Image 1 (cartoon, rainbow, N blue to C red):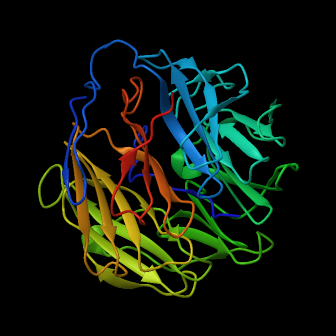
Image 2: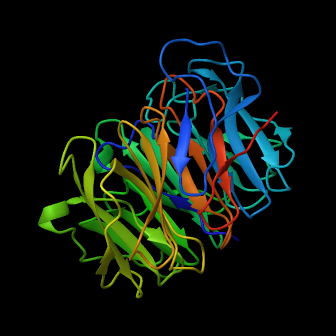
Length: 375
């Protein structure tokens, strides 16, 4: 089973994030789409809004058709051949909304699957399937609030819930066996990001990160803090239960629209970290990801007036950048399904969808990204 990763941007989480668009970057060609502002005609075909792959070939995409502004009717598509062809999967009769939208509680913005059978639609609501999407049921958790994250690995699932009376930094962690009943994990707070690999999981943002190495039986708090020069922290990226990374940033410095970025890695699951390098300054840091089993490759998203995909092939020492002159549409759901295959959503943020950009795929560990069309 591939590792499932959920990460967010600094601050309140790119709401989400996560035109003409021109790619001017290393190893990337050009493409065009409609601007994300105004109310252009709905795009032709399926507009991808969230993605979850359980292997390099099998994945699910949540999105909409014939829709120029959210909310829309939530639709689900599945591929078993790496995006060459797609088939419709039944979805609950709910609205697709921008992430971090409170009402209605039945609405969703994000998809995650643990395997080809067990999956969830969530944020703000929570729906679960155990038969690959043929049937869905709404999950009621003991606390009222918004489900902001779900991740699963090796038979265990985790969900972060932002209480109605709380906030993003008050998110609580719930855990269940995949397909089972959810229970509150006491003492693990805040649970505003979740990253998993094997029996290990990391929850929260530095300096408040809790981790387990035994599928949630026991939890400890990591001691890592970002330096004073770059206090803002990303969520944890994981290549294995041992190899993890965190990005630290000073948002808006040295000038608006940029940020100093420092990447720290650990070879012992987060017990200790050391700095390995600094990506370029362009954009505010969003998500960080690593391919399973390859700690030498790191991917980072960033956005402001444009959007960037940053990649290191040598453990963070040097970085390649792919720049999208898109007005800062940003990205979401960056994750690797194998050592070489990864997916990300090029996303405009609500209420307007990305107009034909949608799903991007890499087959070479993040060096080149291409658009995947879902007819």
